[in-house]
Image 1: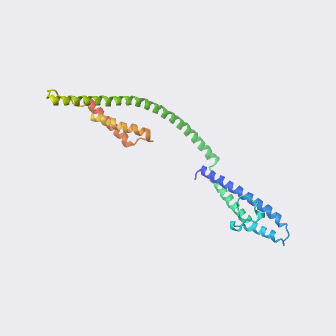
Image 2: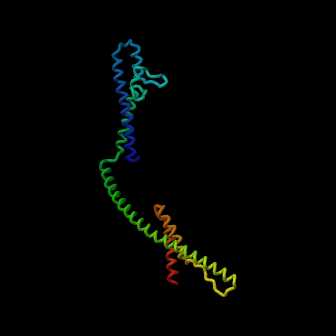
Image 3: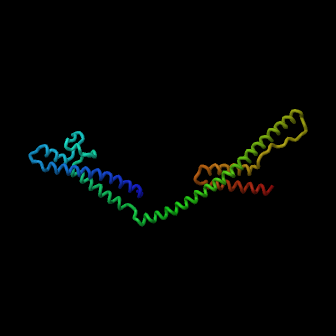
Length: 224
């Protein structure tokens, strides 16, 4: 159980103890009043009996006890026993709380972590801004790639149709296509960038795949 949970339990116990103590005080005051009545006063004896034994809800509350608040129905001995039990539990919970030295050390560590978290958050904001600036350039470049490839493909299809229709002796160029190694690098990098926005960490397997695709693309570029 954490210190916060322990303190919450202590707070709840304090509320219960306050209610029980108020109940006991009112019962004691009422008992003192009726103990002074003659012993042959049957009504007084009935009230004293109820003060000692308590009352069940189905029995109803004697008018003389109706003014006692808190909604409790236990008699004085039972209430005092419950107070003693809760006080024992409270003492045990207090013993479970960290010492002042432990709290001081925790505050020291928390202050250090707070500074570290603040610095890292600022670094993230800087990195994210740089990422978004780079992404803007990548988006423009990617749209240009798609547009120019589509235009070339459409023109080559028109040329192929014309050559086929009139039997022209013209060689049809191949449709433009990215280098397979570079295309794979673009694909896995896209997955990595997607994960950057959604994941807490980048999967080691994905990092390895990106690195492998980059090495392959560099080798093919060097070979060309």
